[in-house]
Image (cartoon, rainbow, N blue to C red; front, side):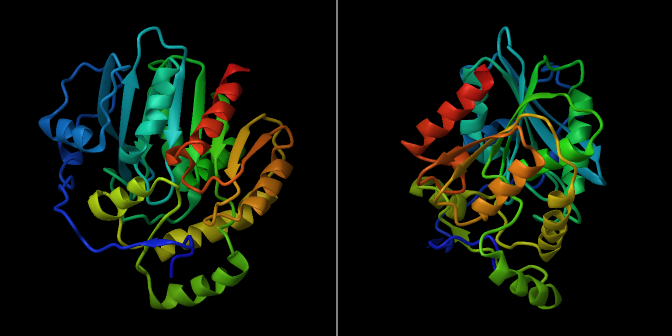
Length: 325
């Protein structure tokens, strides 16, 4: 009963041994952004597995911080003579390990990059992929920004994919401190696709199946990426959370009623996205952010940061143009 299900599912039968990173968080220092401590062997192994080693980075680090009742893990990469800092917010089921292309995007353009695993995702604590309210994501992001204050160079920019986009929208609408210069949303979540049909599955399922099977779905043209998620990624949850779906329902009611915001933001959306109701979402975001710029990428699917060419070329071109303004 996956409310975010696409049309083409990937076989989830196990094919290889997956490494276990469950104990990694306990081995990490507090997040300090100073790059002073060498990476533990467990982190080196994790970084190698997810290909998070970047030639462009002159320094890197990883650490923990607490917020909203969770112990969170954030990672950062520094470049020589940075032009600023890019903060990356991942989507539902995602984590920093599968956002190498987003991290490389920032580094190649001369920015330091910071990425966090949200509660229940990746290396962070919490019931797998569960949350009580999207405002907890906002709270975690605010705590991360507070730790980075005066430690990571300005201007600060932000990129959010799907639920990460919703997190940034929540931050822009409900946080007093607004440090971001450029904000880039990729397929942001307000309402899922076919919600008028699927909402009844949620209302019935919350009494019967608190952790329904997830089903891995092809939400990018990169078939190898989809296979890695389904078969090789130890940090992918095999279930979804009815608690998270309840939080999404609350978000769907809250955001369209929030105040109008004059900030200029970028929204990039694919037309072959079967995960979110992109036409509705683009409209309501445009209504709440009347100065937003909205870019449509014909044929692109939901996992935009991990799309293939030529979709990637058009997506990156929109991001580059936004950053250069």
